[in-house]
Length: 137
Picture 1 (tube, rainbow, N blue to C red):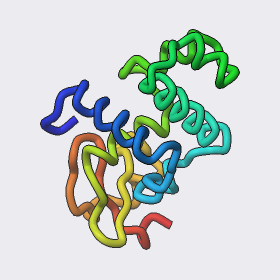
Picture 2: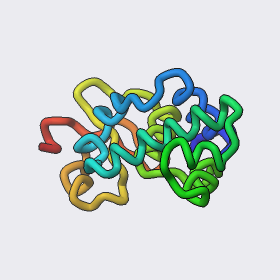
Picture 3: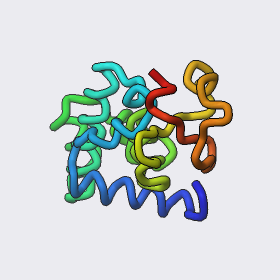
């Protein structure tokens, strides 16, 4: 992402999770709060707990057992390239920061959202644009 390495953005993600746990307040800065469903919220919570336990020294096998998950899921999640949807959004938020006032971030890969935005963006970092909240509802 913009100017930082892949590992640096992953390190920011881990640091944020170790400090704030499974807090999802960052989602309010994205189109329809990342369009996440209940399953994705639960998945992010388990991902955050897996990160926390792993970085506190617990083995992947013990993390999997503690969270009642498969070893392969834990192992995959702890690889920087294999993270749940909401963790990806957190990574983007940690890179881009808060959008302009009364605006939200949205992926340009979201045709439903972007059709409202042409001519209404305040900045266009990476694959995300910043659109007026009133124009997105």
